Image (cartoon, rainbow, N blue to C red; front, top):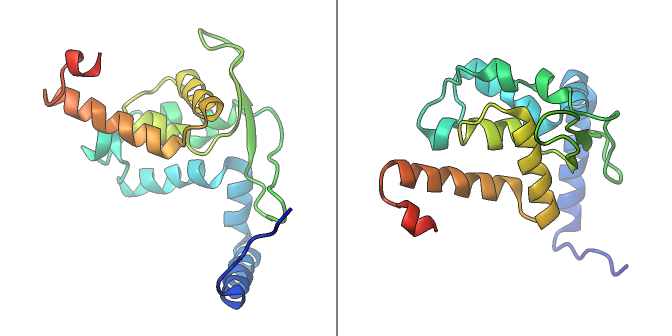
Length: 168
């Protein structure tokens, strides 16, 4: 209700116009973002270029890509994506896990569980990734931050820098 103070309003408006213009000119990217979500769709490029942040950046080729690719993740979407106010991308997803040990898990947002909770920590179980994404949202924890922290802790544990006692 109090508005947002911007130090250089003209610059923000100029950048916004440039972004909107690029979306108008490149509708295939906009369509892919709507269908999959920008974070999830980036997995396609990472796969093609062999630059996944696999297990805390220990490698770039993800041999299990087919288990977590965007089309598999899309199977969990409940409906068409929604948009934030005044955004043409409409990449906000609602998802559900309908079977298995995490059945009943519901979430929304879904930035990039395949990338963050899959590739980064070496998990291939999509329903588990969805559960982690839902828990992140439930507890108000940023998916990118917690996934990176988990990957780093796992790396430290595997390198015997941390022990089970350290992690309690």
